[in-house]
Image (cartoon, rainbow, N blue to C red):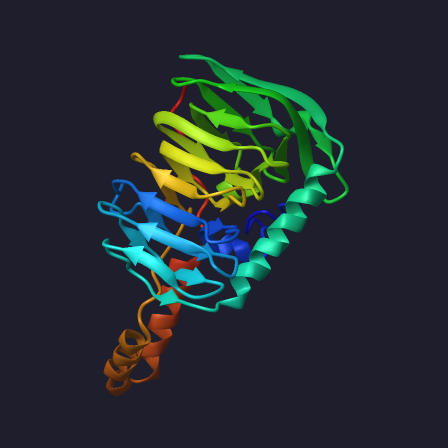
Length: 298
């Protein structure tokens, strides 16, 4: 399942879904973040840097609201707030990247219905996912023959409340317009799967892109957009999130430091078991995944 919907059928992001950004670093390539925050964050969610020598450079005015995990040494240069932990030798980072690489290849090899995405300036296009080809796992598959999403254009993806959707793209792409989700779809139910060594680029004058973006082996250069969902891959070189870009997971609550949790529990001990039950109830509510709110009418 792409999301937490009990009736949803489709692909799974696995543990990678716990990350907002996963960088498939090769050699000593860098994840470079230098962008103004929106709603308090430049990246709201966890960041993972893979490879043995992957590096990261976070420059002012960025704000990182999540943990930063390295599969190797924590080679991080930064002068910005990071509201989370910085950890080295986190084996799950490379495991998650290997999983995504396999997911991308598997979905990219499936048959799908051909589609052209074409929304010029001040134009819109609606895609009903049921016009795709349904695979054996309950995912609708499209093969994108061409993509023209211009500044001021809007792509609406309409779900059926049951299935996920994958757009396989076997060429370099430039997203310069909005992507909105309807019909019960959440950002983890919609995958833009960019194949080969293709480049993923955005320059969209602060447009909003809803969905999960996967480009394992290409170059990722994101600027001037708001991404609601995951951004994964970038094995072709440095990965950039710059010039007003932000990346948000749909729901993210920073994990408090262990000392904070312990102090809170000690304060509750004199109040008895009933207070601990209240705490568990509040945490359960915070951790529920919320659906994407409907977007304003066209």
